[in-house]
Length: 361
Ligand SMILES: Nc1ncnc2c1ncn2[C@@H]1O[C@H](COP(=O)(O)OP(=O)(O)OP(=O)(O)O)[C@@H](O)[C@H]1O
Ligand SMILES: [Mg+2]
Image 1 (cartoon, rainbow, N blue to C red):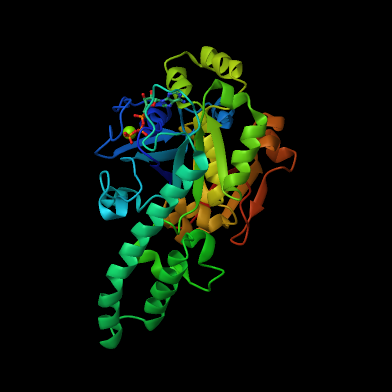
Image 2: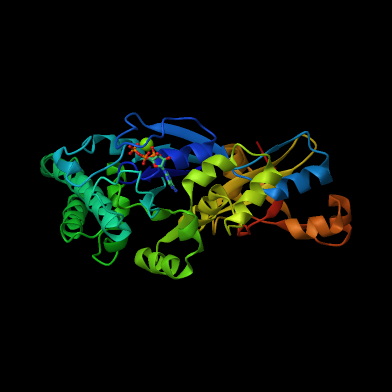
């Protein structure tokens, strides 16, 4: 399981610049709208300092971090659902994403064209949300005649048709499904096959400049604008320079802009918390590795991420918290201190659990 973020936004706001910075890629990022036509996909290892510590303790040959995937697509403009700009067909590329990541221009550089002629984050957020709502409406409206026929022929569940109609009503009010479906009593689980865009959580990237990064009042305003959705602030142009530098120099340059976390770290943190994800760890002489799971998952569910056999044949888990293991300095010492617990199938995993599963095959 890897967290996948689909990057959306108006044209020329810095989506590809950010994508390049996050994925150390070199796709075309250029100062004109619709530079991106074909989607770009990148898988990024998620930096996790705990892995190096574990590798030291276990003498692991390698570390295998969790990953985050990013999909960079074309820019979307007002009227895209009616074919403006590049239309909205390309949105299909991000239907499988776990969350929608909207890049919003906050930087003011007058040399970079804004498609609507002015920098206005609130209006841009609205424009993009509206186009995503319209794209979902098209998907749902297309599904109605087919579903009606199938319900009549008893080949489809009438509850699905009702959910489609309920979802249409929510979207027609201009609300995303993520915000409005539950309150309207629409069961999104019934619509999962339609892979709707606005049923996913949104996270926002405010692409700003050095002045913007330091403007706490403005940041608070923007944060409030999108709350309760999560957001991050970064300068995509600076981020793309950071990846060219040695780690220490990059950290220094980041600090000089008043930031403590790289864009990738920020996005992974907000993405994980938005989607209710966490990691657990395994370690041994071969590798130290991070695994992504959902918060609240039990030990057998977590084991299933490694291999479905681990879940099916689950017997027990030997669990030590990362901090206890590091305190003890070795697995044997952690054990003799009574810090290694034997947990059964009802155990709910905690973030940073270091685990060894016992299972039957
Ligand atoms: N924080 C920033 N400050 C100043 N300029 C920036 C910043 N972020 C991106 N830019 C500039 O904005 C321009 C557009 O960037 P980019 O190509 O990444 O946009 P895009 O959103 O991918 O556009 P498109 O939708 O056309 O593909 C580039 O010239 C880039 O250098
Ligand atoms: Mg682009």
